[in-house]
Every structure is written in structure tokens, then in C-alpha cells.
Image (cartoon, rainbow, N blue to C red; front, side):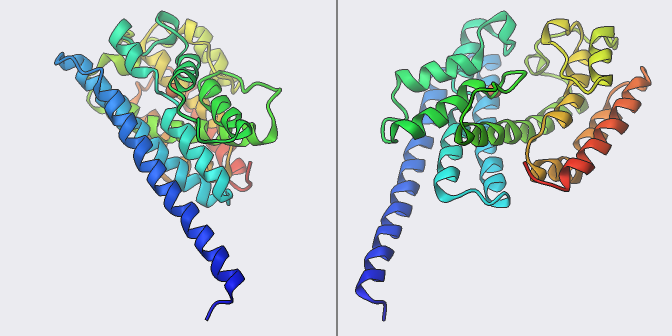
Amino acid sequence: MRKPRFRKLHYVFCAIIFYSVMKTTELKAFFSEYAGSFETGDADVSRNVALKHDHTLRVAEEAARLAAAEGFSGRESRLLARAALFHDLSRFEQYSRFRTFCDAESFDHGERSYELVREKELLADLPEEEQKTVLAAVRFHNRREVPADLSCAERKILLAVRDADKLDIMPILLAHLREPGNAAIVYGLPETGILSPEVGRALLAGKSPDNRDFKSSLDFLAAKFSWGFDLNYGWTCREFLDRDYMGRLRALLPEKPEILDDVLHRVLSYLKKKGERSC
Ligand SMILES: [Fe+2]
């Protein structure tokens, strides 16, 4: 028999879990309904609404795995789940209005998702401090650089969303390389097979190329090697290696230029080293 004090604690714990599960179900239902509201019957829009809807739900799953593997607390896991679910909320509006996922040709989708989450009061049930943490993760998940002035809590959740996002985008890109068909995935860039010198230079330096330098789908796809240097958690690095994302990417890109072999070698060494430790 549990003592009364422990029995009370047990009930409180169960109530928190129950509320959390109900809230997650409610928010996922909202998310799916919101995404569906952008359906127009147009096949191209439907395909890309579905692409981002399914991507988001998988990012939420990757985020939950990351949180478990990296020992996040229950509270941190719940904030991460919320940030993962809303990180790309503006993608549906973006594609509907501009028919592109390229921020430079439309709007900064992290910034717009942040605005939407606030406008729709999707975090109203959370204390202010927790709202700030989720909002920062949504707002900055797509920035080239992580802002330096974040709190520890904001940084922890943001880095996790960035990792979970990359874990799910890689298979989307690999599938596109095997069977190109949806040009929106590579921002509609032409398949010239030429790697721009600026992109090659950034990759060799272990830096993220500037999107404005992308002139071909090869630039866009090869730039994903730099994601290996931009992972934050040891678990994510190990997952990248186990799933062989970088090796599979190289195998599906053209043989030339050979610098891509060099880039692959560097990124694999980096991932092996970083995978040995955590964030
Ligand atoms: Fe995004």
C-alpha cells in the first residue's frame, strides 16, 4: 500500500501525464487541420502541403527520440515537442502564396512561423518563460548561425529542433535524388550538374554555404554536407553515421567535382569525433 503522501504525488504525476497527452493530441489535430486549410485541389499545392505536414510530424518523432537519448527532463521534452510541431507552421502559407520553399524568394519561414504561433496563441497554456523558449526555437531553427544571446534553456531546445529537422530532411533529399519529380524540394533550381565555386569553397572550409550562391540543384544538395558540421547532439551525429546520410548523399551526386569526396571525408571524421560526446 502506498502512503497517503506518495499516493497524492502519484495522482498529481498521472494528471500531468494525462494533460500532456491530451494537449499533444489536441495540438496535433489543430496542426493537421491548419495544414489542410491550405488545400485548394491543385495537385502541386497538395503534394507540398502533404510534404511539410508529414515532415513536421516526423520531426516531432525524431525530437522525442533525441530527448530520450540525451536525457531531457519531462518539461524539456514537452517544450521540444511543442517547438518541433510548430517550427514549420508558415510553410503552408509560404507555398500557397509563393509556390516556393525558398525563403529568399518569399519570407523567412522561421520568423513567419514565430509570428503565427504568437498570433494564434498556441502557447497560451504555458508560463511566459516556457513560451519564450519555444518561440526562440521556432524563430531561429532555420538561421545559418545560432544567435549568441539565448538563455541556456532556449539554446538547448533550439539546438535539438535544428538536429531533429535535419534528421528528417536528409531522407527527403535522398529520395528526391533517386527520383526527381518535385522541383520545390530543391527550390526549383536547374539541374546543371555544376557546383558553384563559392559553394565548393564554403564546404571545404566546413562552413554552411550562403543560399544566395545556389545556382544549381547540385549547389543546394551538396550544401547539405555542411549540415554534418552543424549538428549539436552526440546522438544526432551517431544517427547521421548509422543511417549513412552523408555517404548516401555522396553516392547519389555526380562523380565530379572530386572535392566532394574530400568534403565527405572531412564531415565523416568530424561526425565520428563529435558522436563520441554530447552537446
Ligand atoms: Fe524549417
